[in-house]
Length: 427
Ligand SMILES: [Zn+2]
Image 1 (cartoon, rainbow, N blue to C red):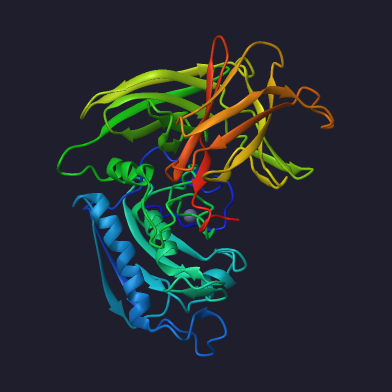
Image 2 (tube, rainbow, N blue to C red):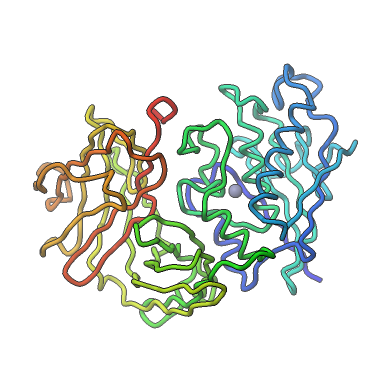
């Protein structure tokens, strides 16, 4: 029986861990739908110089861990049952949750400088059955059960690592608790202190552990680019409003599967190239989705099969998008955080540069306020265009998509704009 070990790093800025699960041809899951975790009774380091804040009690820390368990249990609607007991062990082994074990970090399995915690998983390669899952909080960093500044939020980190322990991979959607960037303090788009699971988290859980009260619909298929399977592509199902509701990565054979509520969806695949290095303060991304299919109807309790095939570079697409605030501050691209009631400039470059196009958003709460203008002076990008957009004062917090339409195609940048409350946003 072959066993595999995965360390998942919280500070991963891209879909780097996705390839680990995405390269496998079967899901990794607990076979009998039960997971028992053992919380280390002792949570403080003797010195108190790092790790859990000395002013916070072990009971508070354990309650933060329980809160994360409750949220996943409720999302699973009884198809996965997670429970916890206390243990005197302080080693990250055998389904333990520890705060004082430096070994996974000292041995290089987890990054001691940037990972808030890591999930150490073993599974049976033949069956996909999960065998053990331990969660080690990084004893070299500061952790808080009360969400203190300068410390990682134990409940939020536990929610993410527990997702890995259940078999979930990283998500590319910014609102997901499984996003690789989840350590960021502004993760919760609704501005609440409590971490919340996004639809993609809940739908992916239901795909691994189908709930007793009915399966969501599934969309399965194969990606091919230039006649070859496209592995590691980010596949997203966007609903009729253009909101990204579920995502996954294609496996080594280009196959993918997403769970969705019944309805009509646009399915799109973003090639695995991902983000390219920042240049001159503007993050360039590209190419944007070459493979788009709309609409796909997902019927209740059934599986819809689709295939996405394309030739490299054939689809008109955006080369990059950057969002600039009124004060000139770079907000991000293609994933940017916006505040409601504010205006922004959107710079974009597309290929080919000719032809009519339309930019839209997944909600009327975000709209263009002026005609498109060409801009000069960006080295290497002579065809850059400037658009102005406004976020309505009553825009609900959450993820929004940019839609790029030409005469023959549409590209959706799912969840690329995230609206937050200014009081809790990244400003
Ligand atoms: Zn992770």
